[in-house]
Amino acid sequence: MMRNDNPARGAPNADFADLGERPWLVLGGGGMKGLAHVGAWQALRESNFHPAGIVGTSIGAMVGACLAAGMEWGDLVPIAFAIERGDVARINRRAALLNGVRQEALLLGEPLRDTLRAVLGALDWPDLRVPLLVNAVDLGTGETVWFGDGADTSIPLLDALYASAALPVFYPPIVAGGRTLVDGGVEFTLALHRAADSGATGIVAVDVGSRGPANPDEVREQGMIAIHQRVFSIMAERARSTLVRDWTDPPMLYVRPRLDGVGTFDFDRTDYLLSEGYRAARAALAREHPK
View (spheres, rainbow, N blue to C red):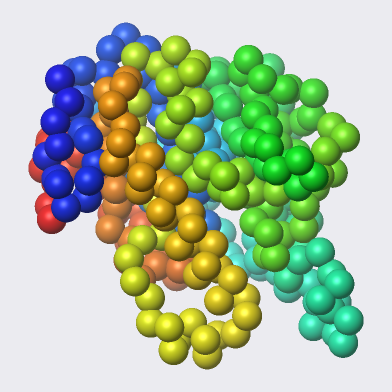
């Protein structure tokens, strides 16, 4: 039976026991805030949670691929602490030149791809132990494209993961499978419906997206990139909040870490992100939802 334990957040929450025999895990996008997924996974595993499938967007797709490959939270913690800015956010120097606005992105894409390759090696779709679905958006048609179990597996897993995280302006799009692809969060940052369509009897959703107000003066001082990111966050948050608020079926256990003030590219908050992801998941499992 569904009930709203926390009207302030507007999220319906189910008991863990209500999730049925085929619960799916949905991991949302949010840049470095997605390291909270690792802490949440620790809490879920301590509760003997075994997802029948995983849906991931952006960094949620990356973490989801690690989990689908059989990695445990103990494998992911040292990886999380080892990630440095240059591993995933290296400036495209040509973007700073006079005609830099014609560049595809502010950051280079190859460092992010190299980091994915270092973590996952040569793993591809057939090597995954748990069904995985990740999304990207076709820059031409504007449609969401799904990769993985029961969807398109014609492009390599690593290409699909990069596509799902190719945040416009920050990372260049990828051309794969005849499409030009960008971040899946452009349309769905928390793709609950895909888990439902895949036969989930219940959903554990970990939402690490931005929320709440920002200081407009501080955003302006950081320039056009920060303004763009703030606008993108506002649009994504409104769509995600409506989706979560109106969700009814299948039952959902909603995990929402406290991430106010943590940035998309905040590389010095790893310890907090891991511990807060764990705390939020434990609270959701215990049906203790602080306002």
